[in-house]
Image 1 (cartoon, rainbow, N blue to C red):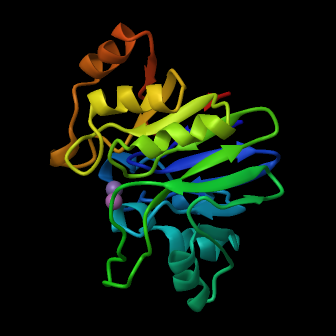
Image 2 (image 1 turned 90 degrees about the horizontal axis):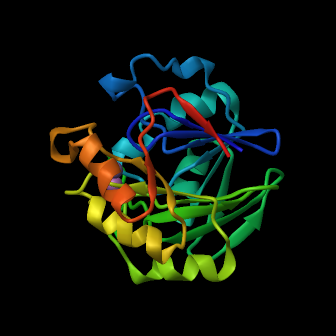
Image 3 (image 1 turned 135 degrees about the horizontal axis):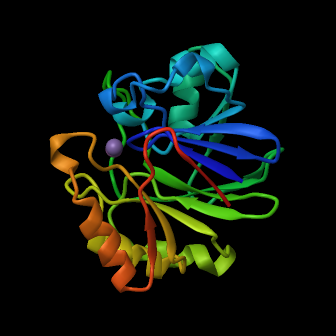
Length: 225
Ligand code: NI
Ligand code: MN
């Protein structure tokens, strides 16, 4: 499984020969100016919730690629009405796709589209690939629900928001990594706006001091699991 960081909460995942884009917000992020949207491959677009900093580039990518949009029922039907391919899910439910199994899990946040449409309840994803399993938390507070994840899935990587203000901060993300029983963490949802700027060295050291590994990828860089 290969994971590419496209800035903010946007990820590319290559798994089982398929390409997945998560929460595409690229053209609205000056820090991601080096990423060319038109070259992004996608068989699936996974959306954690409907906020503009997670769905801005969905229409463009879906038009380019015919990707299937996977999200909660409200977000899936919002895009289905626009003529896009979609797969509706809801919290606690899983589906076996051709690249692996996806579970839509709880997040504590909000979810409404930029035009005010109802975006259902926000979530995260657990993806079980052929060899590796990951958790993408989405925008969320620290929640005891995270403890449910390792009851079913042994994670190889947890992708957690760390920017504070709208989501967990570093300290809560460290506790979240305990809850999901995964010491390898990719941080996201930081530095994009003034509200969520973090000190990178301090964040990495705080994880290190608890025996955990926090990765902060330069935009466009990838990790292989
Ligand atoms: Ni949000
Ligand atoms: Mn957000």
